[in-house]
Image (cartoon, rainbow, N blue to C red; front, side, top):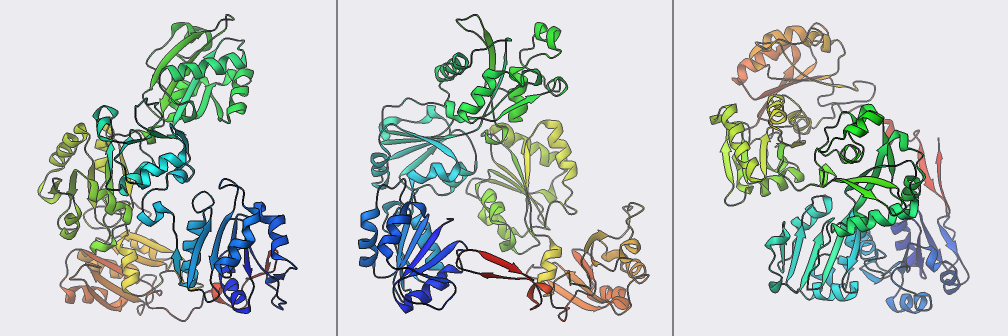
Amino acid sequence: MKKIAIIAVTEKGIEKALVIQKEFPKSLVITTLQSNDEHVSTIGSIADYLNENFVKLDGICFVTALGICVRLIAPCIQDKNSDPAVVSVDDLGFNVQSVLSGHKGGANDFTSKIAGVLGATPIISTSSDVQNIWALDTLGTQFDWKVECSLSMNKTMALFVNNKPTALLLDIRDKGTQHLEKTIPDFVTVFYSEADIDYTQFELFIAVSYKIYEVNIPSLSYIPKILSIGSGCSKQLDSSLFERTLKEELQRRNIHFSAIKNFGSIDIKAEQQAYLDFSKTNTIPFSTFTADEINTITVPNPSEMVQSKIGVNGVSESTAMLLSANKNVLVEKQKIHLDNGEKFTFSVAVDTNAERRTVVAIIGAGPGDSALITVKGKQYLENADCVLYAGSLIPEEMTNWCKVGAVVRNSAMMTLEEQVSLMQEHYKKGNAIVRLQCGDPSLYGAIQEQMTIFDELGMDYFIVPGISSFSAAAAVLKSEFTIPEVVQSIVLTRGEGKTPMPSKESISAFAATNATMCIFLSVGIAKKVEAQLLEHFDADTPVAVMYRISWKDEEVFQGKLKDLAQIVKKSKKTRTVLIVVGHAIGARKNRSQLYSPEWKHIFRTNKKFVVTE
């Protein structure tokens, strides 16, 4: 919310209002009392203020009795599409009540935020919030979906909040559909293909799709912008006729026009007026591509005539594929001849990120503690059909999160070929696959070889980062590895053992910087590492030898750099060790300027923020 008024009518109310104001930078505290506080504005009449500003505000927080709030806003209320979010807080800050525009205006969220600030009880009476189910009227705005209902939204919501059996069809994938999958109410059944739905078993149909579905029960469609349209045309093209015909062609193929995300053609059509008009009228971005860019695409339907005229095999399919980053098209090239003799072609492709397809998730499992996996990583792990993990490096407790029926294999007992074969088998079936890597996959994760194979086999994959052991090491040592005016860099490296290091990346070269150094995979050459570090670090520089950081059997051995090799020898640890060296270990004396009284400060006036030196 941008413009917020906090209205108080008692001195205790003003105290609470000022606490709330600190959490909402663009808020204004208003009262009819006289106040010497520079953050409070005194007005003559709250009713007059509301009459003038009600529709201009995004939110209003009354720190008053609920009855006063209701009487003051009653004359100003119009409808939920334009009314601001209104909440009421009692003078002592015990309860926060959502009063007006709970969903559309955001009063329910506003209530929860204020309750969090005050440590108060949020009171929200909206049925969907009370039941903790989806607010159908705000999902579209939340995830940038266009909304179409066969009934009014109120009637549709009535079916939903009364828990009528609901079929949910998700034939695309985006952040919104992932949210729905994680929060499905027990009266909702999710489907990924419309052919699987028996409509006689349901009273409401909800779809998140670019497709138009004609069903015989009340329906609600959420339409994501995920389609790319590519087009080529004759020299002349009537704007209105082009737009009308394109809409008809999409409708005929049961494709929502509002699902169009972008529109494109070859650069010689950059000034084609029909295209420019179409883009402006429908607020759809128009892009063009050079012949060289277009020729990087292999199109399903190449044209010798187009090649001879403009040097490309096709325009509509290639530009749709470029815009969507998709190797396939949803609608192949269509040649449309208009009644006035003009013609155009068009093709449609789905944004590759929105396709519901199998993909391998390479997930960083964290340093060892099973609770240190990311929330996102855990969610993918819980939903996976096939999980591969390195047993010696991944805590077995993590596999307890896998769902019943999932194939869970310890990759330490498998060759790379066996691992890939298993993943490929599940990939072909469309199953969800997780490859669990220790720490963060980007650091000594050995995923490069796997990704090369995935690329060769045409298997899609993505990476979910994890917490690295060097971050866990800083936590265990209770240290900030970057100390102002002492050290501002962290080096993550390894010593040169059997695997050679690049010539410019020796331990000695990095030690010359005196940065905090986190040295992996080097416990077996500790004496050599110590000698290289001592070329540039003081002998008394703090050092930590850290075994299985964050695991239940974690051990930490600390001392001085001159004793590194001896510390390692006494520890009797030969693997899964991280060596940390640097003056940042345990440092406490250097105070950051961020908290210095001489640093920049921000203070609030009634109308603006001021930054001063």
